[in-house]
Length: 412
Image (cartoon, rainbow, N blue to C red; front, side):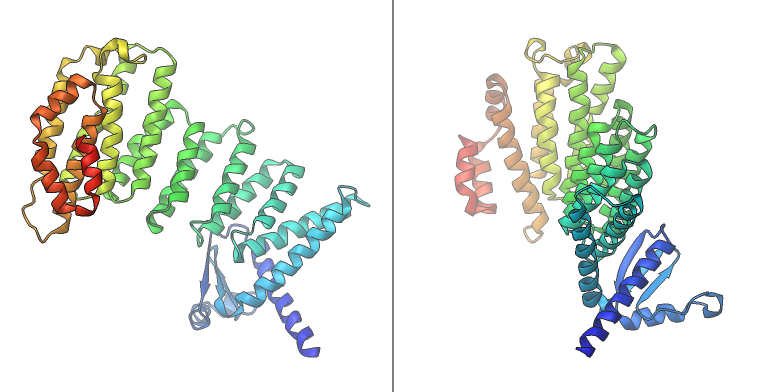
C-alpha cells in the first residue's frame, strides 16, 4: 500500500509540474515527446545559473517549446485522467447550482486545467473536448475562445490528424463568427496554419478539409486571393490530391457566386474567364510531372465545368457570361482539338521500364474516354471519329488488364 501511495504521489507531482509549466508559459506553441537521453542532453544545454528553478528531469521548456519525457507518459496520463474525471464529476453534481461564485470558478478552472493536460496526452478524448466546450459556452467570452484556438493548435503541432482538434477549431470559429471585427484575419491565419501543417504532414485530408470548410466564410476577394496564393504550393505538391480538392472548392465558390447574381458586367466576365484558364496551367503540370493521377483528376473537374459554363450554347447555361458566350476561339471544337493533342502527346510510352510513362498513358486514355461521355452528342461523335478506339482499348488492356471491364464500359 505504501508503494502504491508513493507511486500516486509521484504521478501527482508530475501532473502538477506539467500544469505549472503550462500556466507559466501560455504561449507554448509546440510540444514533443522526447527520449530521456535526449531530454538530458537538451537540459544540459540550458544555462543553469540563469534559471530561477532547478532543471527538470521530466520536462523541457524553452522558447515556448515543450518537451515531455517518454518515460513518464503512462503515469502522467493516468494521473491527468483521474484528476480530470474527478473534477468533472464534482462539476456535474452541482447541476448548475453552486454554493458560491467561488465554488463555481474553482471547479471551472479545475476542469479547464486538467482537461488541457489530459488532451496534450490524448488528443482525441471527446469527453475532455466536450467539457471545455460546455464551460466556454458558459463564459461566452472572446478571450476564452481564443484560448481554445491556441490549445487546439498546440495539439495539432504533434497530432496533425486529430479529428477532435480540427472539429474543435471549427466549433470555435462558428461561435465567434459575427462577434469579432477581425474574423477575416483569423481565417487568413487558419489558412496559413493548414498550409504549414500540410508541409510536414503529407496527404493530411483532415487539415485540407478544414481549409475547404473555411471557404464558406470568405469574401469573394479572399477566395480569389486564396486561389492565387495556393497555386504555387499546389504546383510543388502535385501528388497531393487534397490541395487540388481545395482549389476545386475555391473555384466552385467563385462560380456559385457568379451564377447566383445574374452578373454580366465586363469586368466580372473577364474575372471568371481568366480563372478558368487554369486548364492551361494544369496541362503544363501534367507534361512536367509524368504519371500523377491527381493532376488528371483535377483536369476532369476543370474540363467538365469549362464545357458546362463556357463552351455550350448560351441558352443551355443559365449563368453563362456574355463575354464567354461570344468567344469563338474557345469553342467546343478548339477545346476538343486541344484535349486530343494532349492525349496524343501523353499516350506515347518512350521507355517501357519507366512506370510513370505507363501510368501517364493510362491516365490520358481514361481521361479522353471519360470526356467523350461528358460531351453533348454532336461533340461526342466528333471526338470518337477522331479517336482510334480499338488501339486505345488495346493499349489500356496491355497497361492494366485487370480493369478490362472498365475499358469496355468506357468504350460503350
